[in-house]
Length: 407
Image (cartoon, rainbow, N blue to C red; front, top):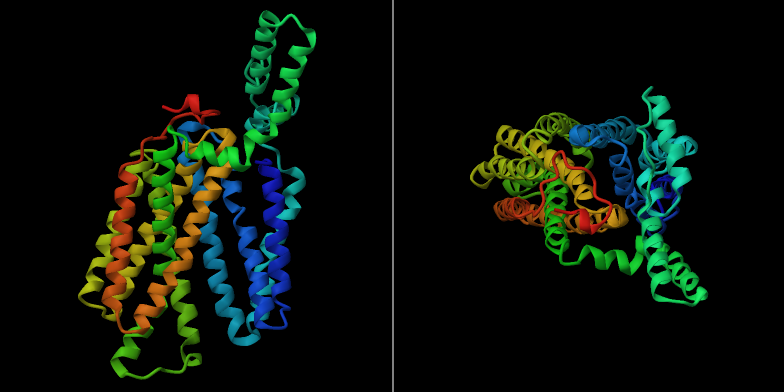
């Protein structure tokens, strides 16, 4: 783990650069390669959530994280409205170029973005951590609490120093052991060691269930977004046994996506209202099971009005659940593996997002809408069950710095 600021910079540069260059792609292969790089850049997005999480107080952490996540909804609505306005007149190249502008704006804020004090402490950079905390205190017009900021790494060094003095008469022995710990310092925050910590006995159950929740949420969220257009188109195709002109439905497609995107606004409001009141697990589970209820009528009937209402309600609930799982994920991991843990979980979710078009598009186009809906129902339901078995409830608890702090 290299810290929130570097993750911030990586996300901004790769996403904006590859996104802008993709608007000039000369062929399909280069376009796919550049969009793949955009995906890699977006993969660093969870680091930003983990970074922000470490600056907010525990009692209202859930509400603040919902507000943070609400900008995903703002971006979704902005992109849908941009496509609606730009695509019919100017085409996809202008859409990709304009879509990269917000990522470029991230670079403007990099210079004033502070590093996480927790991360700095874990790296033994106490002076820098104190500087960040003092700046936070000045901005908020509050005094910095009295006391000495202690790094876990410094405590470890002190313990080794003391034991080396007692057990070894050789002066060089002590220095070697301390130097050895210093050399290992970087390895505690990434790579194989971080992954092994995620699968340690204390975190194994939480990690596996979290992967299931991320997979189910991503599969369902992106699937419902696709079903907004595909289910309606599939009904027409199956009813008429002929494929209508794609271009004739473009305006309707952008309009439907734009309208359905507004479902995430009440989703954000609902998640903000319940996440710090009833807890993370119950909030996620209730939203997932309610989404099942909204999707269930589509198994038997898919009239236009019923389809819109059902998908609107399902997207509301899934977006709320997705928001909360991004709050819960960094809370269950200690600082040393927090960014790694949420990054891998998000990657598992991306797999769900990749697989869902095979259901939302292929099955619906093959006139198997009922099968597609039942599969979504199953995935959402199993995700809710996985959430109910999460081992930790993190509402109101302080963030942990190591596995020993986990309850």
